[in-house]
Image (cartoon, rainbow, N blue to C red):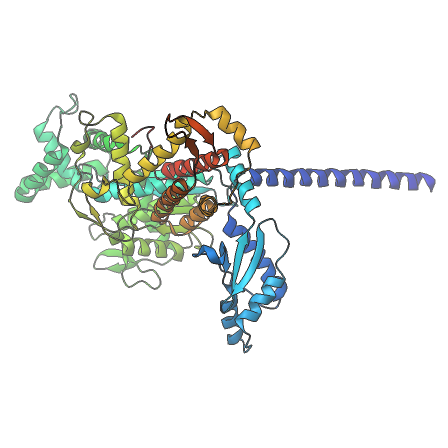
Length: 598
């Protein structure tokens, strides 16, 4: 028995050692996660929601799905944030037959607020608003962390890792107009936001590189450059080339017949016709790339031709599930709740944009295994995408509760009907001026709510007053120059971050500090609604808040006679550095390159 007991004890010791090891691993993992979180910016609104969520559950354990609303306070005298849940909770209780005063609800929530690192005090105001005052010492600590570790956000990722953004998408052999420009600018900024937040992003350019128009282009190519197979044709103006072929197609029946024959040859992958098609596509690609280079756009071309071989299988899949109907020779698909059908096969047996977009969506879901798919096109295509998404859900390709598939539509561009790049040639502008000019074009677009139409105007874009890139870039260079003019180098600033407490006693210091720390909240909101003008509004608010601070609080004091630096308020210099760091990250997400001097 003693041997058996000894063996049993040895077994228990071994199990105990394994358990200790697992606990230590878990402890280290939690410490690493906390360490990682402490190195990234805290989302104060999110943290307050956690605190008030816990208080509401403690105060009202029987109330399921209680509304939770925490927002920044609009008036500083009432505090920094506000919890507005009590009124909505009173309405919810009333619907269940319980009549409770919202102020009483607010008092119960206030009593259950757990100990936390963030809240200095709370006050109940009006019918049941809970005003929140933050601890200044903790906000100061958050700002120091920002300067020590840089502008970083803890990636809020679980299984959501792969994002596909479909943007730009011009048509081969046609001019890139301002609509494509708008898609390019908005799509690129969305990609930059997802990339900054730690997602794996695939940037796709769904160019219009297939269809019947290539028949007339190839037929015209054969006539104009009969030796195109051996000598590369000198097509300089593809737009003019397209117009010439279209004119012949409209008036010359023989040419039209030959154009249709060319389409058949192209679709059957005849090498000579594939070469002609590639030549035409390459001319367009070079023109598009000039625009992409100017705007610093990285994108992978994956046009309609990429999905040609997948379309037959897509139609067969819909047929196999009994979802295809015949309509005067066409094959159509009706999705639930939709009045208009998708045409998946035309009466002549050809495929359509509907078929192509279904094939593209299927490939992105199953082959690319995307968790989020965003289509950035004009709002005129919203009905089309609504039909495609509904059909994909009907056939079981994705569950919208699990996979986010969204059309981020934008309004039309009013004013000029095409965009000319000749205004901003290298001969007219220096490299820095180009950077500012292209930044102004991007910002003019992104600062408008993308859902609305907007007026394309160079005068407004290049204005140096108000919420424009020119004003913000100037404000940024001004902030960057403060340390330089005070003869403070980076080593001194880095040492100050480690040794100097950021004092937030003056109202304007406090206002600026809070504004800086709202950055994670702003990005979280944009991640949900994909409305980038919110970031522009925040950037402008930050710049104007900084101006208020700088006008009211001396950062560098100079002798009025000699101009020599008499005193440097180092904690205020650190606030300048924190402002520059956040502004730089905003510019980066908006794909705008600041310059060192203006």
